Amino acid sequence: MKKALITGVCGQDGAYLAQLLLSKGYDVYGADITRVADSWRLRELGINGQIKDTPLDLLELKNIIGVLDKVQPDEIYNFAAQSFVPNSYNSPVQTAEVNAMGVIRLLESIRNVCPCSRFFQAATGELLGQMGDVPQIESAEFYPKSPYTISKLYAYWTTINYREAYGLHASNALLFNHESPLRGEEFVTRKITLAAACIRKGLQDKLQVGNLDFRRDWGYAKEYVEGM
Image (tube, rainbow, N blue to C red; front, side, top):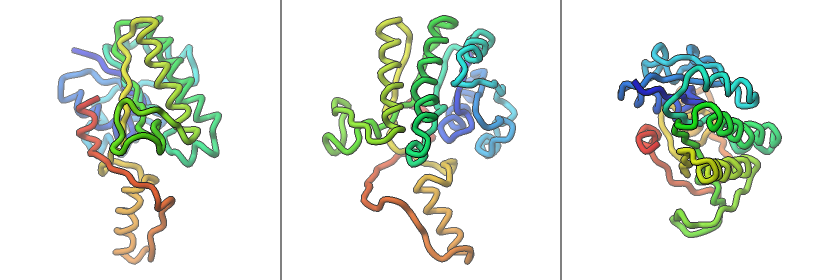
């Protein structure tokens, strides 16, 4: 039985990926700032009792080393991040500690404890900023435009460096917007659907969103995790 460790398992992608790997017979270990047993997403998918809750702190190297030494995972998927762009402007240092330094702590632990593990880093299409071709292509130049994307760019190049310098099986995915019923309510698709439901029930009278100039295409998160 293969063992997979998923950080951020209580998020949209972590939950769908855990469901997929369980269906393939994996032993799934989940780490998240939220207690796994309390995750509404895992309960929604009916898998909350099938995931082994694994306390892991990306801010603490010794903790990461201990978890990897104990679990010895075959595959590691890193979704743990401060992922809400507006919040990164209010907490740029914390964003960098988790999104950037957290990844190098994780990779360094893998290199020393379980170098045969396969590592997946959830990067973002936001690295391209507003530059390049439309539709954007893989060879476009990066232009990070927020503390969030700057931290993600560090993690992106760190993952490549550990693959090339140390021979780890480490991969990035440039993930563009992907949505689902499990999306958090702070993101625009759920903000719109939640507001529509509240307006219908008379609980509010209008929808408020942020920048109306942004244009995005998006996919379905449950299909994205198949690629991951």
